[in-house]
Each structure stands twice: as C-alpha cells, then as structure tokens.
Length: 221
Image (cartoon, rainbow, N blue to C red; front, side, top):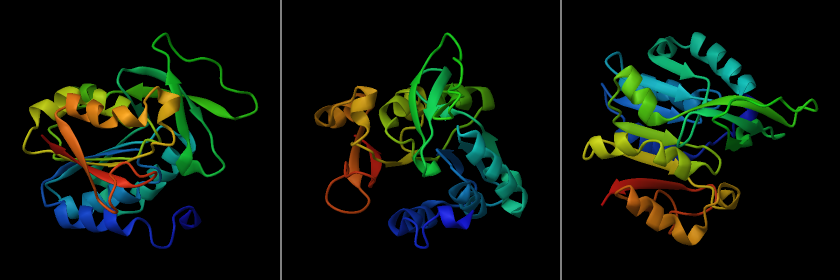
C-alpha cells in the first residue's frame, strides 16, 4: 500500500506532530486513512498515551487494521470505522479513484440508504467527537483532522470537547476550501465559523491558513 502515500508526505505536518506530541498524549486522528499518522502518534505518545483513529471507508479501514496489527504501537490505537460530523447517523461516502480523497456527501439521521450498485458511493456510519469523547471518557490533547471538506461539521461536533479542553487541546486541520460549497460553507465565513467555536486559524505552511489542501493550526482566541 506504500504507493498510495507520497515519498515525502506533508513534511511540515510531520515535523509539527513530531515536535509537539509528548508521552502521555491523547490524540484523535480524524480521517486516518491507512493509519500512518495514528501509528506515529502512538509511538510518540508512548505506552502512557492513547490514540483514537476515525476512518469511514471500509477498504481503508481494513488496510489500517492490518497496518496496526503489524506495528507494536498499533495496540494503543483504537480504530472507529466511521466519519466525524456534527451529528450521529449515516452518510454516503463518495468513492474516489484516489482513496484518500473519498468524501462524505451528507448524513441522514433516519438511517442508511442503499449503496450504489455501481460502487460510486458507500453508506457509512457517522459519529461526533463529543459523543465519542463522552462515551470513552477521553480528554484529547491533540486532534489531527483530514476530512475532505467536512472540517466545519466535524468541528461543530466537537464543540463541547473544544470548550472543555481550553488551554490543553491543540488542533491541526487539513483545509479543503475547494470542497466547502458542497457542505454549504462559503470561504468568506470560515473565520466567523471558527470564531463561533472560540478558535482562530494560523497557517502551518504558507501565508494563508485556508489554502486548498494546506494545514491550519487552530488556536483558542
């Protein structure tokens, strides 16, 4: 599966995570794909740390489970096969030729619909970060998020976690403004949406925190 990851993957993000994740950290990895960052986070957080990874795509989740099984740190990673959003339910996951670009189309609290017989989308479960943290009694210290345009819905679903963890939680998000319109989010309201959560964005690389496929560190106001 190594061909699905670039040879030099996201060096600025890697350096940030390597520098900031300390022993004992509780890390949430939303959109974990094949588990590379989850395993690294578990390695750096050490035996006293904990990692919870969210991955909605059945194919990617199956590969991630195998990846976790062959790495000793994998035993410290909990894999939840679901997308994260602002409310629990189900969603249609649009399948892309490049699997890391699989994208949630929307969720339906009434329950799943039938999958596309041609395989262009798949019904997946949706959870909220707040619900998972409450059920698992987690107090995360870092959230890494790559959810292909659903950033604001996922953050809205972490509202209580963000509020209660003020001062102890770092959040780094891969931004996809090119996909926001399909989630009803206009680029010009991005800052206001973050401010409503008590957050502001600064870029991890480059001058703009809302660059397509760039990374933003979300800080408390």
